[in-house]
Length: 359
Length: 275
Image (cartoon, rainbow over all chains, first blue to last red; front, side, top):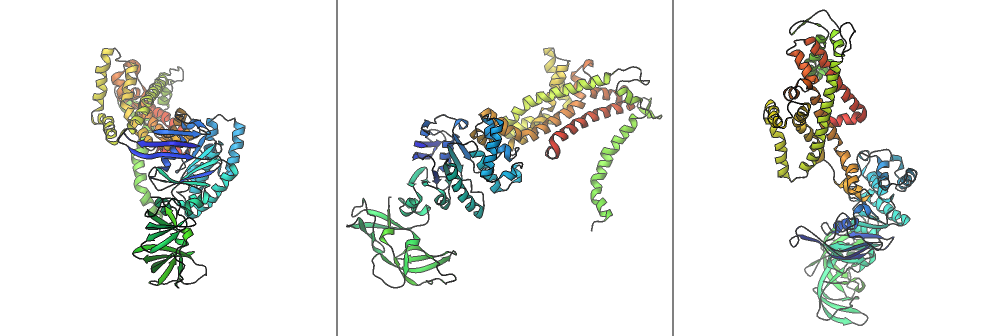
């Protein structure tokens, strides 16, 4: 699927709101592709344009090389799993799933076979005679899924399908969906605002904000090398440290002058001395130590607050007037916090983990 | 503690109401239908089945079969059925139109639909004479048809409108996404959701139309007497209350038959939704 220079405005020409701004994406066959972003970033609008429910104000959408301009939803090789599932309340599970096949005139024997297979795939065969109002949320979700895959579409679009489910069920289904996608080999385009969900399930993620794609790439890429402050803070959390480039070091690094003193980063491509930059470092990469070991890249801080989240301790620290966050794993079961409130600590910022953001 | 007295105390008011205002009157009418006419508007013994025989077209000695009543009943069913169909044809799209308007216009349109009820029914029917006479359509069966459709249209539109308001339009997108053309998507996704309202509207239109006598009296002629007129006659000019009571039960029977058929088709849930 290719999205080429797609823009979308709602409202009167010249006075409307710009919801999508020049989106360019290529989605590869058979991949699990996620559109990730906060509410209002345009990801659902983009999905609806892919499905054919909206037309772009400008730009093109190609599916399998075919231009989809003006092609209505019922003629596209695409099926959608809606956020509200949109099951037909007057039909039972079997008829819901068979609906698309009936519309396309598939002969009855084939219908039965394909529906049975789809129901088996999502493991809901025993509820075939029930109606949607007799099913739980998770079961309805499976029916919506079965209904969408039975037609063997080229692309499956999923609009936040797990958002209505409780945490445990959501995590189970995340894994199931991921496996299902691999088994079926269908291209999935998955919309979500939950970054963990996107990280767990996707091959590639497009992080969207205010109608634009901020960064596109694989999960590790986005996490380890965020390019913008938005991506750094939306995907996981981040410490953002502004500074000025002091000098470049041999080996591709740079020394940045910050309020915490000079910090060395290993990722200095394209930087010039005197340039204003923002550094980003993930909380789990900060090392907390008591002693003063002069390795450089050291920041003195005071423990302001401690949050215990079971698997880890989250430390809120104050250093030179800035708040920093550090995560530490609770390696020992039942151990108290390593560090106490108001304790002075030395934070070590590994240069490898200090990323320079664009803009 | 659930004692017998308490049980009756809670059951009491509702059952009492039904007994006094429904069962008792029906029993009285039934009783009348089994008695003999003694004088204008009077009945007395002996108990007889003669009235019922007449209803079905036989005279006292089972000699002649003159099914005039059944013909009249059949005509009533036809006229009521046609006017109901007209109401459906006009009212169903109207309900959608109203539901698709912005809130203020919607309220205005609903008001326009209901305002006629604030004026006298008789006067509204008489107004049709003024409209139809220059067209040469008064008096006629067509006039009765038009008058009935006009009278019962709001009864039809309101329940349908209430169903249409509750329609989940996202299902249309789901249907289209799965391969239904927009037309088929409507029938597959929207129409079934409006069925409860549609059926309620049909029943609220057909049943009163079946028993109407005002419209057919004013807009029809002697040739278009309906069952309602027949019954009205018995309790009016003819003064044969016994016969009229029997006829009333005939009408009641037809209505109950219709409801029973509906209940068979729609099942328990359908009945619940209807109520």
